[in-house]
Image (tube, rainbow, N blue to C red; front, side, top):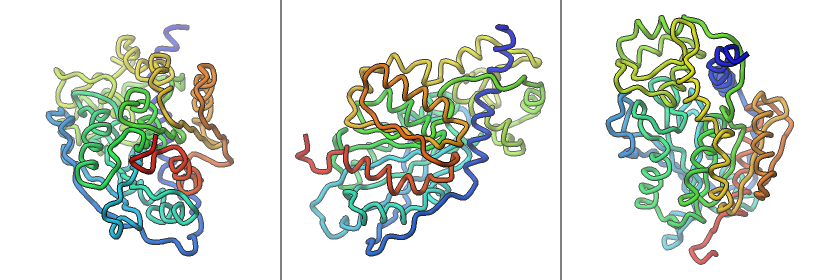
Length: 358
């Protein structure tokens, strides 16, 4: 029985990432434009990632980000604003994420319907294997610190923000939901409210036996970017391995796969399992209690529903106040609607919108 679990555990997270990434490419319902909505300004910037310097994978250290400035930003020049940091999912970057949640239209709609004006930032974490998992790894770089320190510090230095954790929100969808969960548990000193949308990879679940195909493909690679020739499933495996089982003495990919000749490697499987938030959430209950607001949502037809409910149950068990909704929809069918009509109104209620807020 133990051997069977070990053999199937490796495929579990990759299956989740594959289904998440594939779903991320489908269309989503777009809420109608709101009459009278005022335009939001969009800036495309580059943020240097001190936390990413020296990463063995050769991923970019200077990374794109999209910044959405509220309608009053250009005219109310002494006003400061709360900030929402929104994390994208696997296989896409900030630009594709913006298209999937239909910003700036959905931001404009939220403001027109009464949400307080905020700055919204979409940082990019796409890597050689299509996703950082928002983790800390010598192979990909420390994306936990990149989001919570490098990006936040840059935005506070270059825009009129309220530089206070109570005025910063963190949200993510899919792999970004995993990132919001992981970073949110660890960095309540930086963020004040947390919204987790359809998070992937919360637990390691059995899904099917591995094969030697990926091992053979990796053996033939010369550089990390060679993974671009692989299919979705194996690239998700490599992204997970680069994030959760890095190996600085194993070029050219600098990672350990959780199988060897098709057989499970318990030491590597243990590293992967240790990166599942449901495995380490109990260590961060004190941090979670610091949040002014926490909310989770997931579609009733989403394969990630079970784990999202499990996270909700943990918060319930510890008596941590939070919102939770299982809505009618698939993994991506309502994501744009959720951003306009749920996510931004949530942050409008839970973030400090003035510097004097307590």
